[in-house]
Image 1 (tube, rainbow, N blue to C red):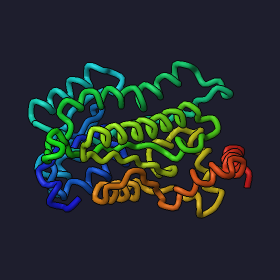
Image 2: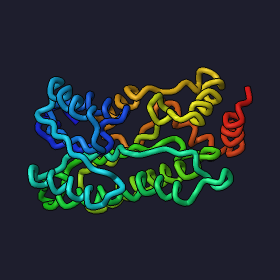
Image 3: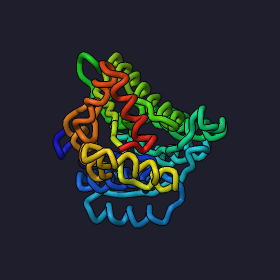
Amino acid sequence: MKKSWYKGKVFVITGASGDIGSEVCRLFAPLNLRMYLLDLPNPNLDDLAKELVALGAESVKVLHMDLLNKDQINDAFNKIKSQEKFIDILFNNAGIGSRCSITNEGSFEEYRKVMAINVDAMWIVLQAAMPFFGRSDPSKKYPNRKEGQLIFSSSAAGKTGVPYMAAYAMSKSAIIALADSIRLEFKMQNHKIDVITSVAAPANTKFYNTPEMVDWIKNYESRGFLFKFVEAKDIAKRILKASRKHKKEIYTPRWWWLLGFLFVFSHNLIGNLLIKIEKGKK
């Protein structure tokens, strides 16, 4: 997309106050977008909104919602609909992580919470947005054509699985499948809607702030420079570039696309490496 395409367009993001979400907002704001920041009540959101206006956003509005509350999600999008005719870019970014699996006695309740926020809520968000998602871009051949962008935050865990993080890996795999399916559906309907999936390596964010996750980080990074945590800003840069270049699936760091490739041809190689990280072997 040319920079001129973004001017005045409507950008909606869930999980806006998170490390990745806020960095994405900072990079998109100078494109002169009308931005809607959706998240739980958080004092950082108001500060972020002011910062985005200073960076060049045409306007920024904060809407509070809990992804575990369907009514709040629908109310948020009804408020956007009352202000805007279209949503041009929808970034499904919000999510949570967990050390929940079957063999470490992860509870069904914790599993359901992960799936409810990472998958079910994304479905509800999409349903709420679809009636006014995409700006009309008709042609003689396709008079009902729409144009826009859907962006999804997934994870490398959704490609490979991770020991003792089954619920999280399942949710991120589901996001990849959801994006792939919707991309095909839009193509069948002859819409010019980009569907972009961000598949990132473990990142330096607040996701890893519990004692057990801190231990996992130490084991992970002890594997060497190839396992250095990526920064939220690096993920944001890849997402902006994907938006500009009409990409489908992007990896951060870029070379991590090899992970999925190797997993197909050498399941044991990647699996054994993940097991070593979990056990903290050096």
